[in-house]
Image 1: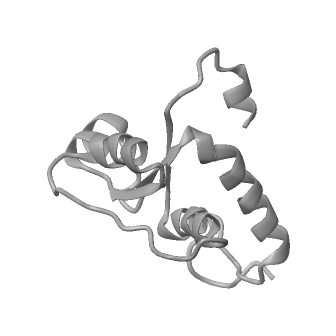
Image 2 (image 1 turned 135 degrees about the vertical axis):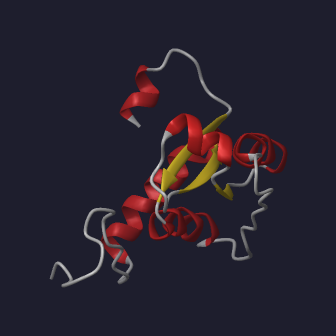
Length: 121
């Protein structure tokens, strides 16, 4: 959130990248009070921009997307990353929910660098 405070404009959307467990955490926080589902679409060749920017803007809900070829060429992501577009109006609520679940929900989410092997506890 510190970076958002320093940014001179208020964005419409924020796009985040992470592994499946990290993105699932965003989905869990969003659905915690309301239930339901967050669905995603994939085009296969391109379309990450529309999936993570346009769809959240139109629906006002987070959207999860598999990264497209254009994104893979230009931003050099990890091969296991997926993306999530979050309407800026939900960002503070999502961040507070992530903080809350970190402290109160008994589910362990491994950090991206830990991978498989012995758990950290």
